[in-house]
Amino acid sequence: MFGSAITRVDDLIAVNARNLPQEPALTCSELTLNYQDLESYIEGVSNALLVAGVEHGDRVAVLAKNSLPFFGLYFATARIGAILVPLNYWNRAGQHADALSDVTPVLFFHDPEYADVAQEAKVEVASSARLIELEPWGVGPCADSDWQKFLATVEEEDSLPVKPEVNASDPHMILYTSGTTGRPKGAVLSHERTVHDAFAMAATLGIRQTDVFGNWFTPFHVGNWDHQKFFLIMGAHVVLYPQFDAVAVLSGIEEHRITVMLTVPIMSQQLMQHPRFSQTDLSSLRLIYFGAYDPSGIMDRVADTFGVRTGRVDMVHTYGLTEAGCIVTACPANRLLEKWGSIGRPIPGVEVRLLNDTGADAKVDEPGEIILRGPRMSGYWNREEATAETIVDGWLHTGDVAVRDKDGFLRIVDRRKDMIRTGGQNAYSKEIEDCLSQHPDVQEVAVIGVPDPVYEESICAIVVASDHDVADTLPAVLPDFVRERLAGYNAPQRVVVVNELPKNSLGKIRKPELRKTYGSIFIA
Image (cartoon, rainbow, N blue to C red):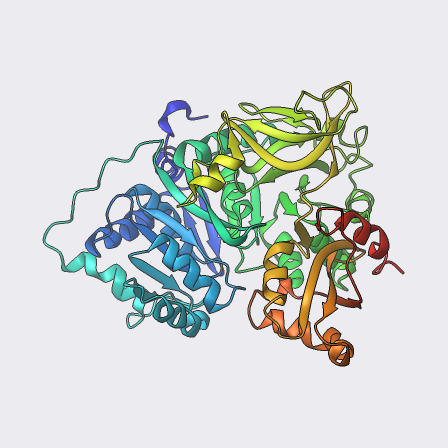
């Protein structure tokens, strides 16, 4: 639509401010900004960042839910060449302290409800970052708030600092993805990668300038920022929610006439099971797309309930990951029912290969690890070894296993076994195992994900007690032990105490055997 006029993330707003100035761009609570007003807001935030001393390449951390200030910071940091670091608000202070130590931000913005944890994290690592409190959702500008005082500093300056030159190859965001080797890794994303994805997916999904998109995804996931850019690049309207809430989403679909909905199975289930669902006018919806593991067949019910099978609503199944972008393959609406369960084919600009166990390209219907080449992360922040292990000769190794059919459509057949997709969140068994191993009554532990009809997967911890006398107490004690140290969704839903864990000749725990033994533990 705009060609080479958009090369940086902030261009998405600036170009539309010139071409579509009066069209609605963003709705937050009761406030709707057109593209011209949104551009002015972002420019004001970027100037305030410069006045605060933020320079090209500096990191700016944010611990908050979706909001207009957070949205403004995303584009404003990009405009001046700074790097935004969204933090997971479900994490504990110690995890935030690790991130602060890793990226050393100069500013640390946070919602009022996270003031204590932000301060605790800052103190724990003696961070020099300046803390700035954002305004809570639904509250209008308050002159006495930290955020308004921050913006007002621009008015006190006789002249503003000159904005630095920003190149397409410059990083604009670091997103943390919990790793299988302990501490989380920060994936470094460039302007070039993000803009490419926006163009490619706007075309793949057939986004229209008249579309209205509801964004209720968490801002520390790549899906939040990437998906809304598919719409902003086309001059469409984004309706922002602080977080997913079934009542708010159903009301919003009616009120704002939302046309495109991104979902995951657990969200879809909550919507369909809500008492208001049957009374909600869904006639504005024209497209539903999703990208999540669905062992319980929830998306089958979505296809029936929302009219996908009758052709009233289109549906697209996608696949992506933080390191490569929220969507790298897509099964288009016109092939979805025929290829049900397939994640489709690569989007424009992305190459995908499947490598079998010998390292050769897999044949048709032969399982192989998905590796891909194209716009992707630049690497992991401060993690050269992890970067080298993940990106080999320009190819990013995902760890996911798929098969390709004769038409080139991919289907996931095995997943990164150390990642557990629970309730729409990514939990990592290694991180949970490391946490549980700190408990004095745990001698040995293995954590696996098992199918769950509600949460996609649930977390099961198989534990060897250090003392037989305390074994009976562990199922009740260990979930809270994890909640106190990690984000709540990492807590195991089931703890099984055993005498010993199955191991191979090298002493490695045989997790496939554990999955076979306990795989039906949550299935009635």
